[in-house]
Amino acid sequence: MNPETKPHRAGFVSIIGKPNVGKSTLMNALVGERLSIVTSKAQTTRHRILGILNGDDFQLIYSDTPGIIQPKYELHNAMMSFVYSSLEDADVVLFVTDIYEKHDEEPVVERLRKMVDTPIILLVNKIDQAEQADVEAKLAYWKEQLPNAAEVLPISALNAFGTERVLEMVLERLPIHPAYYPKDELTDKPERFFAAEMVREKIFKLYKKEIPYSCEVVIEEFKEEDAIIRIRGIIYVERSSQKGIVIGQGGEALKKVGTWAREEMEKFFLKKVFLELHVKVNENWRTDAKALSRFGYQS
Ligand code: GDP
Ligand code: K
Ligand code: MG
View 1 (tube, rainbow, N blue to C red):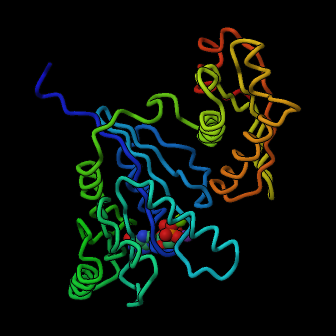
View 2: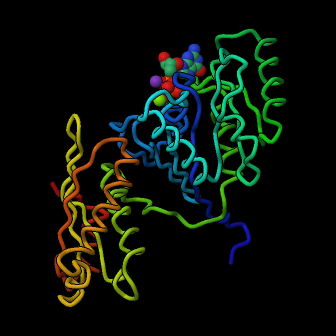
């Protein structure tokens, strides 16, 4: 064992904040500086996972969220519950504010105040547009508003000022953990990967014993249209007896997997999802399908 070897760190970093404070710009700055592997740029903030940054000894999974807004409609409520659930999953929270942000009691600040286990790094963005005294006043204000914040930092995401330090602060606080996602394989179309993971997770919850371990999920089609995402997934099992179990009496079991996974996908992608699932026997999936689902993303 080489004592110099740094432990591997990995975790989920939630970037939250009101619309237009600069969350996406920050994400790009953070990822752009160390362009190792970035997920599809085509994703927008409707989506939850924005970027995965891999280093030799770390994997940082950024999730962006729709901006924090006062819920006015049902959709907004759904979006906000999304923000909150991303807080719960986070290992580190990046709470982005900007120098224009008004003093108002946001429900999200209250929520953040109650978070004790998750480090919160509060960023005051767009300092390029303010006098130093105003920036300092803002920093003081936020330290008072959110005393549990681990750090309160001034940045300019647009100019990548302070963003290197943000990355250091985040890495310092990431848990020691192996990579969650294959490091060299997640180059584009990550949506498929996460869709497959959602199906897999439901399989793990709904079936017993060896079944979950015998299943592999391949997303054969992922078509995003204006109003709907069409997803076709294949669940590969190793034996035909397992196929019967996965499908269940009259297809009931598979239907449950599908409904549950679809609901989760709709929350994740914030779009209506049409999910079609098929079960196929493939004795060699461990060598074939797995590689396919991780790499190939055929079609
Ligand atoms: P989001 O809605 O929080 O994701 O915000 P965006 O990243 O889309 O940024 C909203 C606007 O603020 C865009 O016009 C950005 O160019 C601008 N912006 C972001 N960061 C900065 C910054 O550090 N300085 C300045 N002046 N503008 C910024
Ligand atoms: K925006
Ligand atoms: Mg954005």
